[in-house]
Amino acid sequence: MSVTRLIMARHGETAANAQHVLDSRPPGAPLNERGLAQAAVLGERLGADPITAVHASVAVRAQQTAAPVAAAHGLDVQVVDGIHEVFCGELEGRSGRDALKSFMVVYDAWWTGDLDARLPGGESAHDVRERFLPALDRILDGASGDVVLVSHGAAIRLAAAALIGDTAETRFLPNAGLVVLRPDGAGWVLEHWDSAPPVTGDVTAGGAPA
Image (cartoon, rainbow, N blue to C red; front, side):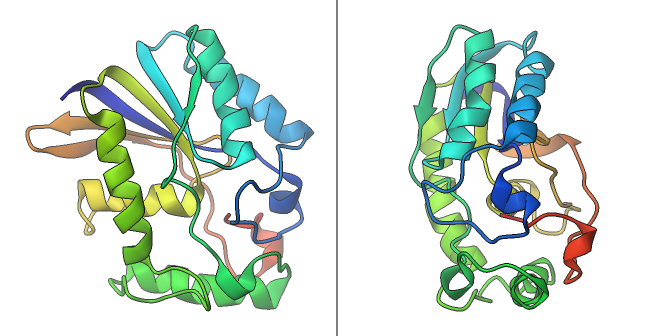
């Protein structure tokens, strides 16, 4: 593998994010006006980087976010299965304090080492990694330069933690935020992480994590 950097970007904002709705099932909500602006800024932010490939999940919001980045480099967005958001199961489409608290109980358990904790009717951290990491291997096989992957907040955080070690500090990722990793021997090291304030059961503290 001759990849210089792996740049994982969270999608821009959607109406579901802004309204605190848990939206994990593809194709999902499209970007809202603010999300489209965030995607445009992301394209400008990465415009000078030596990007050789741009990938996005099967969710519409991820593909829309990836489009300005790809356009800046004369590339197509390559849609990849397996890198979509954590499936919320019974919480899908729900909003409000109780739904977000139910999500965060499981989400917080993952960061204390309980990767078997499962969203009701949805996925565990192990489930997400078992589909995300092989998809990432396929993306990186034979790749070179900087590779961009536009995915989702929880999925990116789980994948990044697996790549840099579960004892490494990881944080919430804002809409259109970046996690940048670079290869180091047989593994990966963290170069940059755009952090966001923690999401809590108080929905006034931030948008829905999906």
